[in-house]
Image 1 (cartoon, rainbow, N blue to C red):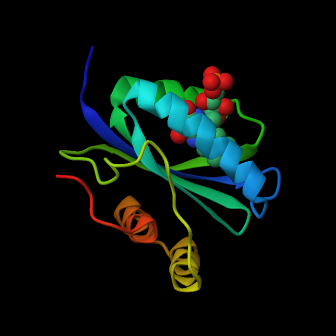
Image 2 (image 1 turned 60 degrees about the vertical axis):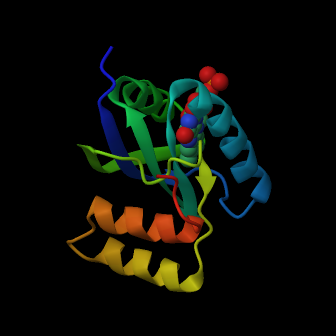
Amino acid sequence: MSLRLERLVYESTATGTTESFGNLAVILAESQRNNDRDGLTGALAAHRERYIQVIEGPAQALDGLLRRLEGDPRHRDIEVIGREPVDARQFGRWTMASARINPEQGALLDQLAASSNRTPARIVAILREAVGGADQA
Ligand SMILES: Cc1cc2nc3c(=O)[nH]c(=O)nc-3n(C[C@H](O)[C@H](O)[C@H](O)COP(=O)(O)O)c2cc1C
């Protein structure tokens, strides 16, 4: 089995409200349980009825998760912003962190959405900052 480490960044449109702490808490709990099993780490943010998620781990585990995400009725229109091999994890401490977007970070995400240079690296940097703390080595 290939253990090549990859990082996936996508956005999707929530079908229910992202304002409900309950909705997000359920998704996070499921994600943490499965990701612990699958060797995946990452962060999930909700902003303007959109989900923004960074997931990193073995390519095969990412493929399996993408298939499940595509069949999940809690969101639609998954748009992969980037998927690439990486040398190290940026979210190694979190099986799935809740990235709470502050108004400044929200404004940055809005700017990126409206621009042509919405690169995965920029989104990763915003989510990493929203999660806070220092990553493990
Ligand atoms: C926005 C969003 C993010 C999700 N993130 C993950 C995740 O990181 N890991 C995961 O296993 N499931 C995640 N899920 C849930 C999957 O779509 C799917 O429901 C779940 O993996 C199925 O788990 P089960 O086989 O234990 O029922 C997410 C769902 C949504 C709507």
